[in-house]
Length: 582
Image (cartoon, rainbow, N blue to C red; front, side, top):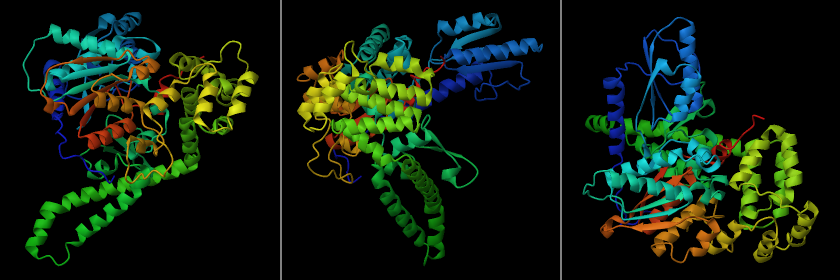
């Protein structure tokens, strides 16, 4: 990206402190407290071990606890008697202990908990690694993770605080803030050197449009195609050009990845080609060297060049693999449909594309994603509900009825209102769908089942830039570049506006449309720390949003630290809502 950071941008706090803290706690927990000498990954299969003591370090998930119960009961049936210890992290829940009791092993195991909250994935990304947070909190209304999120914020406050200002939007954000304040008031107050200024707390349900859009920055595409887990990706044989897979850490330590991670994918091949030429030039320096120069080259440069060459080859192969997969999926046609939905044009053509997508059984998750994107941008799902939803069931099976119920509950699918027949609604849309003026389209869809809040928010915040001139993705002018210039993420735009206005003043209409439970609390910290901003996403954050915030930081002289309950994307978001056990 032809864009450099402002000179007055502050330095980020050293998050390696968190890594050291986690490592030291883990060593003490396993080696000193429980005398663990060998570690195995928890897998749902029988345990082969001669040890008379087994220690499980797990998340408090009922399915995992049931598997442990099966292990204990199998050992008892085989006449094996061992000591079992379950360490729950970050905390122990009554529901898990109830499972132990139901399965008849409560007296055979002892339990403990380890308060592990934050995993630094990079110098500006921290994750709680709680993918279940989204479904539990926003769908099931289970608020047990709110305390965990508050504790994570409290840990950051104790290490890098106090904070200058705290802004929040969303019901869960409000509860998380209150949980954190309660812990601060109960704890010991210490005067510390502040390293973080403003804090934003934002609920995932404030902005569903962004995670439903196809990602086109390199890091986002790698996540969509290969699934990045805990900052690590596994490239298969199609990338490694061998019969083996390889795991690679994707962070700022990878020099090649660090330079292309935020780039629009259309710019990536050009950069990689230039990088290959630069590497070749560096290798060619060996020619004409004397012995002493060659010795210096080998000891100081050669190892780094070989490492960079290996990583460059991997990223070139990964990019080629992405291109092949996206070409198969008619990716350009898919992007065109998404952009039309975001802009509010050619809705009938978009509906036809989605219905064809469903009828061809291209991908169940992709079809569901497009239906949801249509619904949340236009509230137009009711127009095609009788046709497309029936077609969806025929194509993918009737066992997704509960999934549709979950999506409606979250507002991702809008139900047809009583008294509104398909013919009446098609007539309303049909009269205006060919007239591409934004005002008439808004009028058309506002008369349907539910007012299109996205369209109103888009107009209010200018989320869809005017397309009078071609958008130069090589020199982006705003955060819309992460979606090919078609859309600025609502979540990031809200953060930008609050920073500009130094609060929610002037955004009353926006917060009303979001129904956001917004709040702002001010402290007293010297101004020089205000440029380091911590953004906490409750319910997940996409790599596209992280790229957008990095761009905003470079433009405005800020540095953002993103804290999220988990990294998400359209597939993870929808998979969390699947219920096909009818």
